[in-house]
Length: 137
Length: 131
Ligand SMILES: Nc1ncnc2c1ncn2[C@@H]1O[C@H](COP(=O)(O)OP(=O)(O)OP(=O)(O)O)[C@@H](O)[C@H]1O
Ligand SMILES: [Mg+2]
Image (tube, rainbow over all chains, first blue to last red; front, side, top):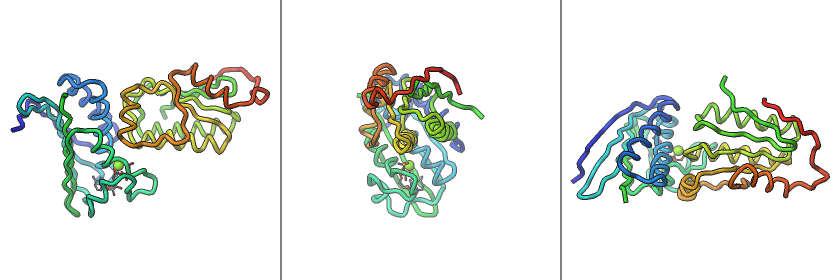
């Protein structure tokens, strides 16, 4: 069972909202006892996912939670948007897959590599939800 | 509009990124730097990111664009001072910093650039100015 010990939510509409979220993640991750490398990985994953919301769905909402499961503690981030959704999630999770010719197609697969747990649910016409967890090791 | 200063050091340009770049600032920097390389005929660009706490795929793309454009203008790009946690994260993200040299600090970066330029090719113009 996952127990949530603190939770905050933010709406993500601008780049500045993303920057603010990253600062909050850093503070909460440090408070949870995550090391610098884990903090940096989590912030980088969050930057990718928040940017995807802005770019593909125009806006979205983020949840930043301190959690525990048994003796483990960690951070859970959830990104929810009501944008166009992703028709083929398996394809979108592959390195180099992008619908934006300017991009590298690294955000989703890269974010998955940077955290301990990663889940994505997307429905065309409804939106996309991505949840990630980084445990303190 | 807010700008990141570009410092000229002989044949090289030095940019120190003090804040976490947000998109518009990053895109402005890309345009300014390329214009300055063109105008000054600079042979090298040093980008000091020691104060930057994350590099995501967007920022990586900007650095790659700067390096790629500079190369066409006959200048090399060296990214200096990358924090170890950032370097580790970049590898896992899978971001290829293609054509970008890295160095521990500005001094080492300058050494690296000097090594790529034949000595008689170096400009003697030494005035430093802020743009
Ligand atoms: N929140 C979202 N809503 C709708 N589509 C999305 C969303 N996030 C990702 N996608 C789709 O999945 C593709 C892959 O996303 P990913 O973040 O991996 O790469 P990218 O955004 O194209 O490039 P990069 O992140 O490297 O700049 C995107 O091109 C887009 O088509
Ligand atoms: Mg992306």
